[in-house]
Each structure stands twice: as C-alpha cells, then as structure tokens.
Length: 195
Image 1: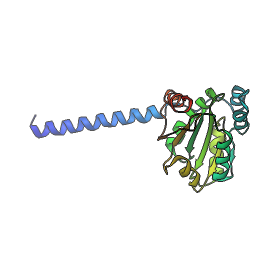
Image 2: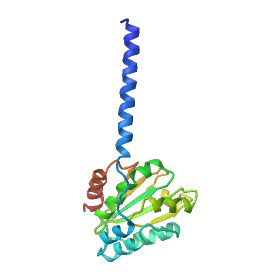
Image 3: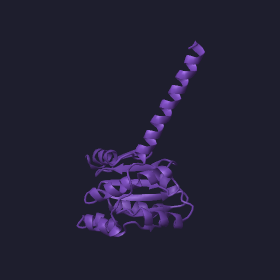
Image 4: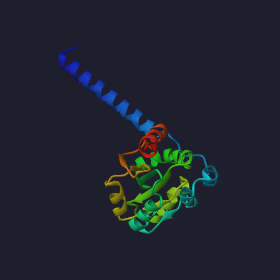
C-alpha cells in the first residue's frame, strides 16, 4: 500500500471507531426504559414519608402553576430537607432519555429527598401533560413557559439541568442528562444527602 492509501485507510478506521463509540454512548444513555410502576404504585411506595415530602407526593405527576414565587415558597417549606430539582421539557430528547432514571430514583429516595420538576420552555401545557401521562413521576413539576423560573433556579438556559440542595442549603448544579440510575443515585448521595 502507498503512504497515501495508508493515510486514507487510517482516517476511515478512525471515523468508524468514532461512529461506533458515539452510537454506543447514545444507546447507553437511552437504555434505561421508563418505570413500569403506575402512579398509584409510586404513591404506595413513598407513603409514610415525612409531612413536607408527603405534600409533594400528594401532587405526584401534576403540572403546577404559580411561577417562580410558588416554587420559591415550596423550597422555603422544604428548608432542612435534601432537594433535587430537575429542569426538563417534553421536546428535549435528552430529558426524555433520563426520565425513567428520575422515575426510579425519586421512588427509591422518596422518603428522604424532595424531588421537584421544572417543565421549562414548553410550548404548551398540553404537551407537558401528555408526556407526564406516558412517564409518570412521584413528584410535581412547575410549568415554566417563559423559562424564567428554570434559568433563575438552575443558572442555565440549557435543558436538562439538575440542581441539588443539601440539608444546609448548599447547592450543586449538574448540566446535561443522567446516563444511569447509578450515576443519579451517586450524585443524590454526594450532593443532597451529605452534610
């Protein structure tokens, strides 16, 4: 083979490797299917939570209004409780890919950690509600058509973004989707549950 053909062959091999790795990563990030739990089953599993968390569970899968004022009032009522806030939108493919992960972790940690969603930049409430019917979660989301709330809470215009508050109010922001239940569980333990 001539040096030019070797260079072309090497470049082609690199392209193939990059494509394969990329496809594996895409497949890996979307490999967590939605929870098979119904909304009723989720509520049963988180029953008996402390009162501030029980109030969240009572609004499971609802899309709440009230804007930033309502969300800040909710956060104030949860002071001293570890909190995880996930900013999502039904049109966001990365958000859709990680929703099954949030379904599982919010149920497994629902007795000790408050989960809240922010549906940010959604074109209509109907789109968000249709998505939530297909992918129920054990916590409510706040509707944020203007993206003002999502940007104020997450300090980011991107989606998805996850914010963690520990018991003392210390904050950690994770940009981008979660690829697995294990990764979200680790971050909940590290950023929300550590003192």
